[in-house]
Amino acid sequence: MANSHTELSILTKFLLSPAPLPALISLKTFTTLFPHSQRSSPAIRALYRNLQTSRLQTIDQINQNIIKESKKGTKQRRIIAKARQEEKDDIRGDVEIELEEIALGPSSNLPISKPHTLESIIVELSLAVDDLEIECKFLEEEEDKILEYLRMIIGGLSDLRYGKLKNPHLRNQVLERCLRLENFCNENVSIAEE
Image 1 (tube, one colour):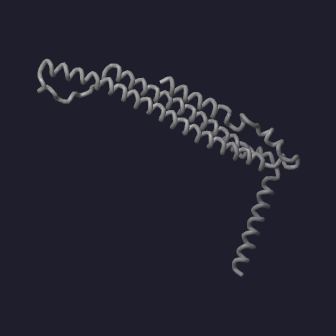
Image 2 (cartoon, rainbow, N blue to C red; image 1 turned 135 degrees about the vertical axis):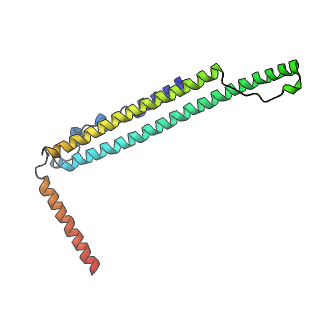
Image 3 (cartoon, helix red, strand yellow; image 1 turned 90 degrees about the vertical axis):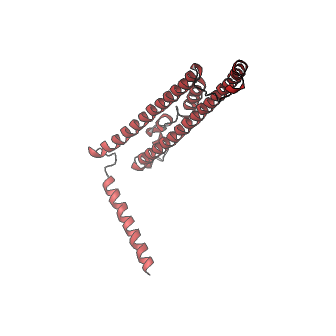
């Protein structure tokens, strides 16, 4: 019980806590890494958002791997606890069979069903509670990450909605690049036809 929580908290603390990109480098600091003439380019912001998205996907993958490893550990502990309980039950069963044979003779040698004992039920229920707590915690964390990601997207879209684009020449740049792409495609089509 405590082991899976400890394993989970250690992996989460050291692999996920400092992981989001804004925690490592802000957009402003990231922009200063580029030449001064390029710092106002919208491509830098797009690159930063792309890196941020990529980083979030990596964090989600690591988070899923942590959950899988934690579940493996919990499952292994369950198997060990069950094996130990079965071993105890076998020893108890052997003693009970011997006592029945002494008291009633060898005719009562019927298979013994192994119902849960109070101890085995407590072990199973506590493991199930731990699993549910772990899953709830990760679902809440995943929900927070998704909400943060959606807020980031909405923030970016609100710039478009209210016309607050940082680059006033963006429209002309997009048109110019579309024309270049069209010319390039036309040149390649004419080369292919020859």
